[in-house]
Length: 316
Image (cartoon, rainbow, N blue to C red; front, side, top):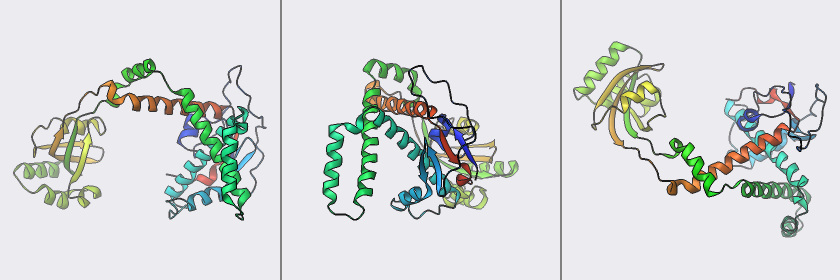
């Protein structure tokens, strides 16, 4: 079993654990809490555990139990998609452990509102056979949720900050040009020229796509590609697509690493610059989300986590 001690950086914490390697902890600020120290060779994880956060383990049974009680319960956990799901869930559980520890350190576990909510939940369970387990799970879930809310309030920007962020990231919020397309992809340049000529002469684009396209998606959808946004695709193809102006106009062929593309413009929508007032609330939400991500990274950099990397082998 391959295990690594990591001081999580942003990639490991927010994108998954499959690529975790050993990192030296970053130098914390003078007033930051110090992480629990462990030797360079971590203590092996106990049987059934897939990760450990400052001494507290996350087990495979926890992961599987959570998935089995969710809408994705039918997924094959041995498949690449299943391993990726387990990887993402483990990341979320590590984040939860970090926030729980922070909440306790800040005294939230003694908060009267929190304690009252837990008491009310426990009373509502009656004599449930797994009463203690359910209450323990609720305690953690509620504590983490309250800590997240406190952090959201703490990181909420003022209007001046939102204006500045919007100005610096306007391209993210402006609505780009978009085009509704049909497409045919072939492997041969000469065939691409022939297909383009036939399409321009009025042959059925759907028939041509079904007969010639090497892209399975294009074949299944009779050439329909749907709406695409300027800047979201391959630059060379983008240039051809957004040079088309008339509905029914044929573009290409243009070569990419996928082959030779011939496209047909079905419709087009012009982009527009959005006003700050339209996006102010979303911009503020985005700023809070980014601040929370940075905060989680900061917490993780002070933690020592042991992960069974082999458990996640094969994740997409």
